[in-house]
Length: 120
Image (tube, rainbow, N blue to C red):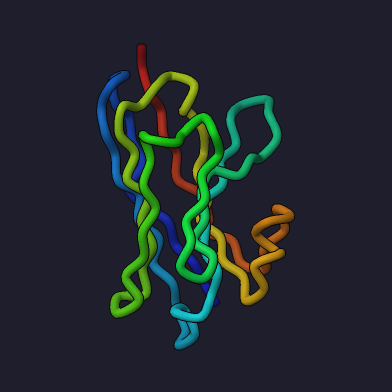
C-alpha cells in the first residue's frame, strides 16, 4: 500500500483546510486508517483514526477535526476547522491491516507528509 497526502498549506487562525490521502492497492477498504502530525521540535503524535466503523480523535482536535474515508476512491480525508497556531505541523496519513499498529503509533504504511501552517 502506498499513501500520498496532499492539501496542506498556510491558513490564518480560525480558518479551515481539508487534507486528502490517496491510497494505492485493492485492500484500502479493509485497512485501519489515520492521521498523525509532527510539530517542530516535538515527537510525532496521533491525531485521528477510523478503526472498523469507529472514529477516534486526540482531545486537542475534538469538535474541530473530522476524519472520513471514501473507499470507492481509495482516499481518506481530514477536515480541519477552527485551526489554531498550535495545529501547525507536518501531517502524515497512515494505514495498517492491524488496528493495533495505529493505536501504538507504528502503522505499517505512511504517507509522505504535508505541511500545515496556521498563522496567528
